[in-house]
Image (cartoon, rainbow, N blue to C red):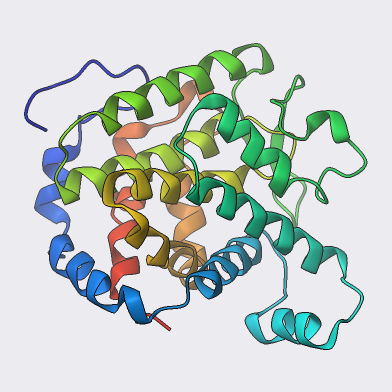
Length: 265
């Protein structure tokens, strides 16, 4: 950044260390992707992004199964419908800039099936406390932001995004803050369901505002799904929102650029 800016919840405190440890020349990979862009099928990348992001949350549908349902006109399962909902949210984001209202609209699209029985929470922040539990033991591993703080914390995050999109950021800075946005949504955990999907969507949404449509071809969701153990380890920086250790966030922030090493397909 040409000058320091006063951010509300994000920060550049570890940016120097990030640049020192980030081994990729990001602009070369972005330029290569730009050259490939005319030959790539945009919709297939939205499908892949939605499937891999859903896989991270436990959905077992793969690309072949998804296309088989579409091509044969089979009755959609809940998992297939959830993927279709997420594709709709990605499409909406691709046509919009980030505001709080639009972020909530994207969540409303992607949670249509996830929160079918709790429609009041579609496109709305949660009003109850949330805990994340170990699927095997049931033990609490993380508590999101207190419900009374969720709206305020998300407004602070969106304000930071707006500030950043007005800056002339270099590629390392763009990727650093994109991953930090992803991390902050996961930490706040603002929704009744769909937090991980929204965190990954907002990360890419920010990339697209800073880099243009080429960002939608970056296979970030596939990268995280391929490195799932490291993803969950690196994103866990504390037991509750008030005590997260952002000083330990570099391993997570450094994951995103490696998505550029995945071959476009």
